[in-house]
Image (cartoon, rainbow, N blue to C red; front, side, top):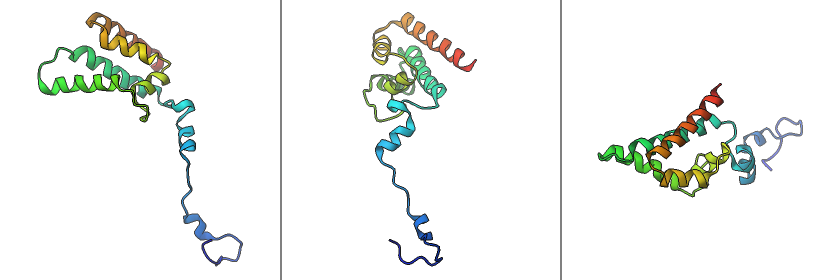
Length: 130
């Protein structure tokens, strides 16, 4: 494979320099069952809380930079992309939250309803942090 074994012990030391190959299926298995965010529920919840807070607090923003933050949060919530471990649907899945229902609430709710959803996420965060 890599030439003769200079050590004479039957193992080629150059084989240690050949990188291991990881198949996509093996990589996905390391991330967690079903592509869930393994071992990072607090981070997943913090990402979700930030997006909910941005959508709730910045919906009426008029200045450019603040409005951009709102649009980015809304774009993240609306995205159906599942390729990123911290995509909205993946985060909801990791937290055992119904992504479609939460998305609909965030996009159609008035400020009172968005505040209720944000409060519920805050309680979940407190429970997770003990």
